Image (cartoon, rainbow over all chains, first blue to last red; front, side, top):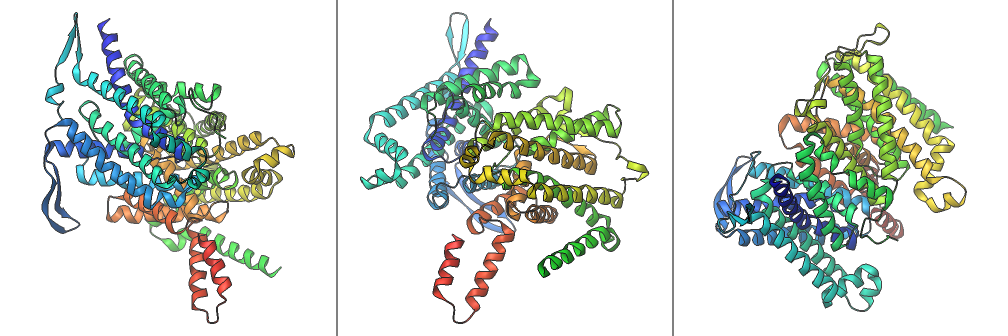
Length: 307
Length: 332
């Protein structure tokens, strides 16, 4: 009995992480129609940056290609886990913003070039991470204020995993409020529905798109740091997370917050229970609901039919 | 008429070069690289059927390639003969292609790409995680190469000739395929799917059949690959594999017969050269992708021709401003 409950708690925690990862992917894909194959890389880069911030701060320098650069500390070591996650998210959001503003924008509406550009950058980021952080896995300690467990009756729930869920839910509500209830959200929706008319009435659609892209990148990176004590960070994490984001979005429907939330928790449960019951096939089981949805409801559970 | 004879002369020259390659290449290292180029050219031609002529960009083809390699490799390891193993590998891959197509053709454009990507990752997941079947990270060893009609393929030369024959058959069937009414209707579905439907064509069926053709040649290439390396591991099914073959198609120029072949040569040579000096092949691959998209979106071969012409135009005296502006427009 307690095994199943532990599995369920783990599933919810993984669902929370997947939500942080895939909500940005869903927004970028649903609102801007950009298939962002960089998303797993943002997650991994964020996790690596967070690990570095917690361990040593961000230090550049050292010897590469026979050139020695003096060591300079750009950002000092940070002991607060959440602050590190936020800073890492902000850094990756900036990277995402630059890529969108200077490269992806020039390819607006051209899907294939966008795919190839993001895929190219995914390989570049993956290899640079391998160069900097080497092939060994990194696993930061669970933050001290979140260590330990809550006791309910005879059962223990690790606080850290509950915290991931809480953060995911807070972010989900904040995003929902922003998109559905603020002026900014209304402008975003207008830009998505009819970009030329939105421009005519004075909305700067291209700035909004940069904002969304940075936000998605930052959320993925934030999720990466949040997940690091649990998943650890290692080379190849990027292309392991990317398909998960893809499945969540195919399941939930692109551009839908609720879809991303439901899809994430569904995949979280399937992954953990699949791993426990059919360890050899856990990865395959993940894709079964995706296949079902594709056959029965191609626009996803909560998606709108794309025109 | 003169152009056709010139073209024939080119083809004959290329054939003679290819057929005599082991004689003047000498070193078996280079002959092996030539075999790699040819087998990846078959794979790139297979993908080009979908990407170039069908307008359907797949990022899951390494999955099909690996299914053929694994099926062949596992059956050979289980003690079956070469003929049985190869036939079964091709049939299994065709069945897998049909499943891929059934699911991926629920959508076109980005949707198609994302679904093929996810399906390719499933294949990778099976190869990597289902250790009792595939041996996981240890991969599958293939101890022998076949000897069709008593012709041994164990040496570099023998394998090169076998690959060359398969390659030539693939190119010839592709050339016929492209010019056939079916090839024309496939291009029709790429350019004007709605009009094709209105004309009474079954767009879905045409795309499905094109996927099977693509799957068949991917299977053949996968088998050549597993015989070439005599080993297959999950790395083959990884997204990098699908990206590499897509790079071959795109760098050479899509929807041409020679483009994917040139692309395969470029990528294989570069991969071997780069790997000899630095470990950072993925970085180089990424940079090439970004550079191609930024500077030569139509592919390396047509792109170089365009840049060459632009440079030539700029050198010419008395250039007509209208012509140069047209060339600039084309470049965007």
